[in-house]
Length: 334
Image (cartoon, rainbow, N blue to C red; front, side):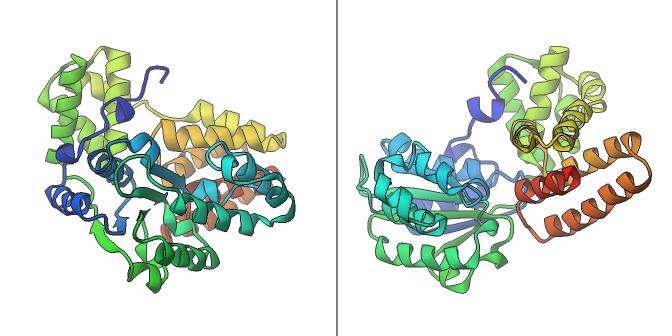
């Protein structure tokens, strides 16, 4: 999609969140900025809910909200951490030269938490996809949370809260974000298509909601794809558009890059599928195997299936989609 994503242009306010229990719990955190663990399945709206909370709680969320995607942040190289524009201002050349990657990450956590808010009384630091945080970094995070609890609210989002160590659980209020029901998903889609002025019918919205299977991001992007390709979101338009939605060309390109050793380009395509197209790791893995069966045979196909089996197991354990699929591309390319 070349147009702005509807998931961004129609980001919900706190009052717009489809799950009433989540709205109520997060409203309580506006007046009293307690630390939170926000957990739930892929695509349930965890990150959107946290951003809605920050918009409600901060007069200047652009500056008083710091978002760190754990899979990306902890997967950065030392050079990438030190040169990231979000952190460069408090990593001097001496620290850049003499510190290990672990030291730099710990320093970034401390500095992000200690900076005074631009407006209001506190900052909010979001650690997204926190199931990917190693235990030693979780211990460092625990100490930062203890030291800066008066001026910084920590919000941790995860699909698998059991991956977090008990000291972090004990310092956070749990917020469970369930997958939206079909009716809740339809209500969100109806508001968006009406705001966009797109012709639609209830059957079309219900078809898109069923296609998404509780993944709100996938539903919104599916509705946008249908609207852009068919000019409307009706039953016939959604069926004709979404039954053919796949990622064959992107996966072909991703495998081409992996085979050529261009892992940066392969990972960029992977990010496009996971973020821009709203696919989860298991969906990308299925597409990859479908393409692989028509592309390879013999030992190559057997190797792809072996790697896919390992990755599928890791994904069911709540490990990072990006890291596990990136590992598959790197190993298969080699």
